[in-house]
Length: 234
Image (cartoon, rainbow, N blue to C red; front, side):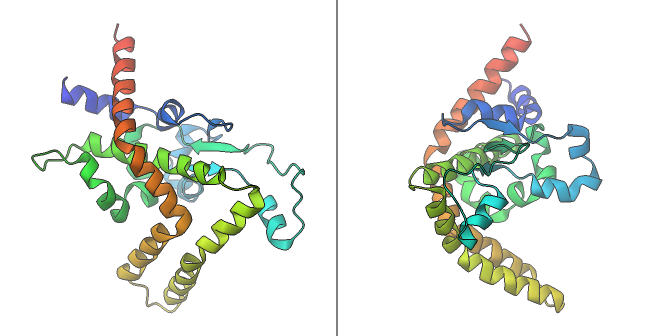
């Protein structure tokens, strides 16, 4: 196999398409965000890109608020007419992910966690393999949230569990905002906030699911990308 050839294929392969092909089955569809690629890649769309992170959307803000204020009804339809429930990934090439979603693909904590999965026996690192490992991990992490979703009897139970799980993160996030306003924000404090986030029970659970299936799905992803490229060039 020509490593340069597969590297090019990986970098050009759609993140959304890969997610559709490697996510395990569920009752939820795999969807792409409803926005044109050229707008997504515009520097003016930075704030929008931050909102378009990969996610498992099972609840709307309106529904979540109803749960917290005690007005939620299990049989009421809270689904948004445009953003339907499901797994959301942006339809951009994998090679653009470091630019488009820095919070996910340039996070040193995630990078350190995944390094054993993309480092070769001789210690070398191939950029495209690193990129693919992080993309597959991200996709499986969202499915890990779905696995937790299936453990609960209702959305209310799950939402309350997540709210409690995120309490340590809310505390440090409030402190980070305070330090920022006072002009005392440091890189170490920002790093600690990311560490706390990854240790939250819901995020840790999704990470563990992803790590447990990562090697298998990396192999599957390479086969999919390679085989599809062969069909294109036939």
